[in-house]
Image (cartoon, rainbow over all chains, first blue to last red; front, side, top):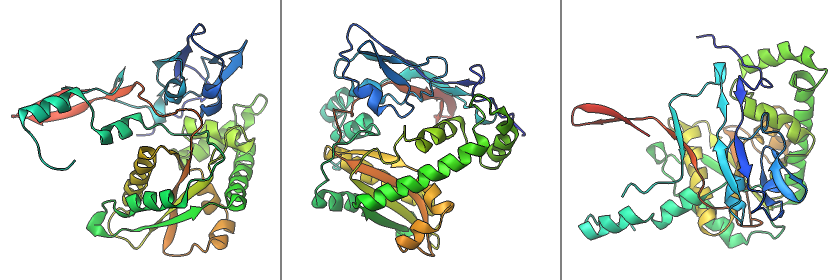
Length: 100
Length: 241
């Protein structure tokens, strides 16, 4: 099937991940800024935040959450692509589960 | 350990906590910020052992590992890839203001190589081009993984399995790693590094691993999307996530 190539800069066709940084918990260490593979975070007023939550390039890898020593970052949503790059069968976000 | 223990007590304990191996798997994050200290040689040898003992079709072990701990080579490959990214961006990065004319050519290349030009690697190209995204992120050790094209069945798969064995071994030792597939550009669009490292038929590049001592504490559990899994049992099918 000849699927459409989405516009990469159209937020309805190419949706990037979103994380939220609790400004009260953030210490401004900027480790999250440094390790983000998408360069999606910046230090602003000594606190970390997403540079552009609409077009972030964020792939929801969670590296920022994991490295934050203050547990200040939460994952709001993952990335979602359309047309030729549409994923399928995706469910909710979940931490590792024990099922025991 | 590998001894079968399905006693109620053992299963009960297992239900309440992850095994050490599971913890390494679940806490592993790709590390992109390293300390400058080199990884001790014996640790790299141990990591290679983990790769050596990976399963492979017909036990063919169709991999060749190349260890790079020479900054000139690591930086050299990085420069080659960054240069190629700069070249490609000039033709296809249509998201730059004023460069919408690149869209038709971008679409042509996306059609030809959809995986390589998916929105994610597409977005990484200009970042590698201008140095905002390092190739090996300052890691002092890099392992290149080559496949023996004469090997049994799916040699790419076997190299991936070996690579992930190495990743998990490294993380279990407190090291950080990151899969780096952009290295492939240096071996696909240039002959320089094949020649410099003596890579010839039957070996072709598959992927590479950056390895080093991480800055901060990057490993930890994070939420991740679940996916539909079809489950067949007792004559029924259900879907779990």
